[in-house]
Image (cartoon, rainbow, N blue to C red; front, side):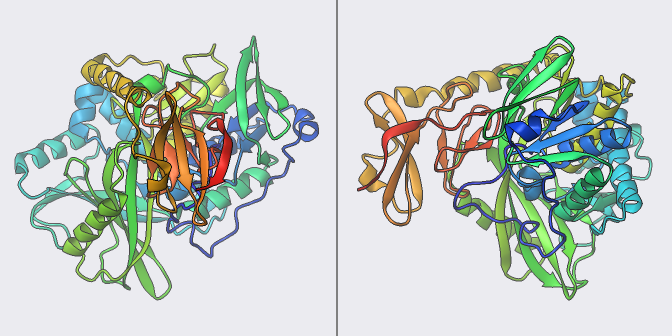
Length: 522
């Protein structure tokens, strides 16, 4: 993704801590001279799963593609996924059928199934060693919940075309209750796959520029111009794809239809073969999910969950502890926790991603966002749909994922979530989080006041204070301190910033503004 990297004290996911293939380096310098000399058919902004898949499929289909990222491929949220490959919709088929009709639920299942097939086919054709494996998936009824809900979900899944789903008395792990078994799900090593896919894109003639932060996108008639890189190079193309997790191409149109959430994950060591190799989910609201990552002489169990809206919690340590407690209750063979991390997902209010023309433009700028916790498959669907649309062909799923679709089926959620955004302007008039800068511990931050203006203040381990404006440059909400990732997070639309104000995640494209005398020893 274009907004790559994390805070200065960021956590490390299981994929980042790896000895696999190195991520391919950029082939084009991000300078004005090098970028300005290019004449691509399509520019793709963001080198995560959605951007690289789209770039690869377009390049393979005959388009010349320039792929841009301000960090290495996979340096953003793709490196923080748990890499479940599933056509079992996170929001449940009963809900997708209610919101999008029976035919819409069938298309959702078809598209996610096709995404898994596409990943499997690309890994085989491009000889990508990424540990792709087909597995069963188990949706486990949480204690105290009505078993009839599981039957309703099974019936809705079958109406969506998953004829082989079946109800079982129990999953193959310690869990007190029935479950649904979904065959032919899959898992993958996220960054090994992305490294291979990026290499395949380059081998087919694609161009990659890293360190190429995109600051502006403008459509002018039949062309789109972007400004990128340290010296603001201008590059034009017939189409631009914005695949930055949260789109940087508009200020409101799509952001009003989705909300940013943080999700948490851990990995624990388990004895080789002691846990059945499958995908697992429960039916809690803020559900848990688990899968294995095989190693040579042991396995690692990856468990995620404990989500909350971005910027609305600071109890990250307690959330990782809750994940560990759930893990040990279901997997008594679990050993020590080896990794703790978090990631950001964009939750569309009606459960499905936004893939297609950005409604803020005239049809030449395309977006892929709203992964809803299914980033690997939604990102692959984005490549399949956008490749067809940019070639001028119809996609059978284009209407389902249309970014311009109305929120009439979730009007209450739409209004409630957008009214909630207003709450995050209150720090303009409320008091500071702490009584003074002297209360900020080393390695921590807080929003204080300088006159009437909120200021984001971070104290590093040496005791030096670093001050930035706490006002997000996207739509002027006030950021919050994230002690888990040591970053400044905007609760309105998910922009995230390092302690020095550098953009980590869009939709913001500019850093937090500096404050005079921004570094001092207190």
